[in-house]
Length: 230
Image (cartoon, rainbow, N blue to C red; front, side):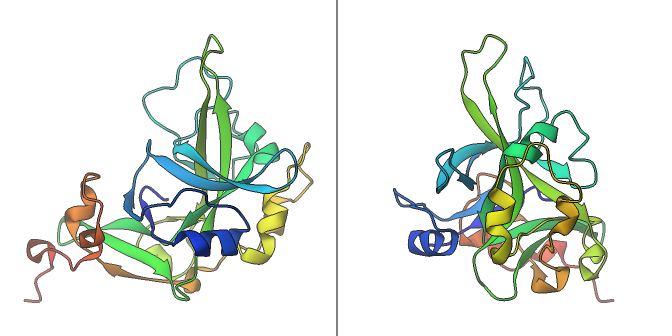
């Protein structure tokens, strides 16, 4: 799954890599968490790409109330069938730029955070979907998003049984182009980034607190969380 990630890519790299105008400077975020404003790349209704700020945690357009638990992830195996996602996966797919993400694993009885990042150190993007929620009375305008996940089948399975899907640059245009209905086998036609394109290491438990949002989140694990060698 994906419940925290970081985005420290400079504006000029975001513009160059994703073909968008970044506008105002985007400050580095070392601890992006659900319900926070996040950046996505999507296709504008006039055909060009745009960089937009939305909230992480998809609210289906038909819901009367937002609910207590945000839908931060969507399983690729069921995204076409789930009422919460099936409209967005057809017409409102997006790219979610990131520099790396976090995952937690139990080590010596404690939840140890790990930082996962691309081996290439290049900017990358999760496969995402977005939606617009207007509320029961139609008086709201809240744009939200969720990140697609799949089961882990390779080395990443040692960390977690799910992983976020990462779109290859050559497939950005195909991923962003809306379809209604979705072509048969559309999702299966994508060759998402393999698990071997990433490596990971344990980091400080400071990332557990969303108020910590600096390079210290990527520091060495705290002494007390290290497993004993004896």
